[in-house]
Length: 284
Ligand code: SAM
Image 1: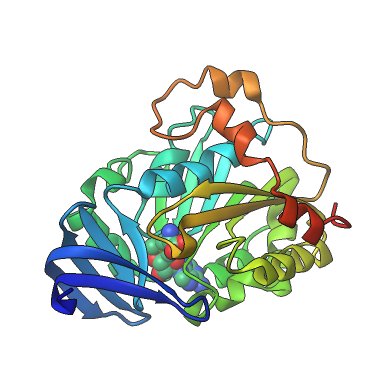
Image 2: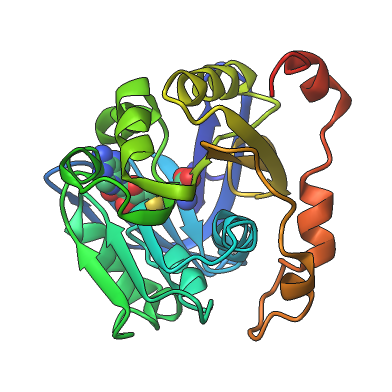
């Protein structure tokens, strides 16, 4: 294998790696916050890499973007105001805006360059950026949440990079406390929570921190994501009050197209693997 023809991300500590055969490198730059690369691959379309970690590919981003948005939006009784912390590729924003109940969706990414590159190399993910309900801010999501008014948002989606660098504080109890204050009574936080196979301790710490901040009802859901380490990813939903069953009837009759998400997938994603149940058997 000629390394110059392949992009490889090694999963630190897991003794594994994921590679994609590349046609060429389309772009690279050091932004004010992180190192950004875009590749054209042989079989996965374009690939965005941040600080050496795969973020988004044309071919498989639908798993992640749909599962970061629709389960939470169909769990909240009537989501009107949504914030996306991170999410600079705009794919989650596009999914959120498919929900007719949403009146205002704010995407808060620290790095404007991620969005500018997504507009060029992933235009399909940015197709709702000019929706009048969309609002793109380029500041630190930690500061945004700290400065926000209490009871001002129904759903906060944390679509961030891994918990290192600028995203580290997005996985801590102070951030969750600020989220708690901003959320309305039925409000939900949903956060990408890495791989249950490789990062079980991170999920435990995250759920403990959410709980300490008053978001004591948590639910982790699972979905495939082949470009991320282990190929199996998760998102964790947290709320102040007990999570009600998702609006299955509405999900079955969703007025928009998806590639992966539907009501059956939603139910299936909530099934807890045996090792996960054992790890969390005392969790609420
Ligand atoms: N799907 C990806 C994953 O799980 O690997 C995440 C993709 S998205 C492009 C991650 C975004 O989080 C990046 O654009 C990065 O700039 C943003 N980000 C990291 N830390 C942030 C912070 N403190 N506030 C706002 N955005 C942040």
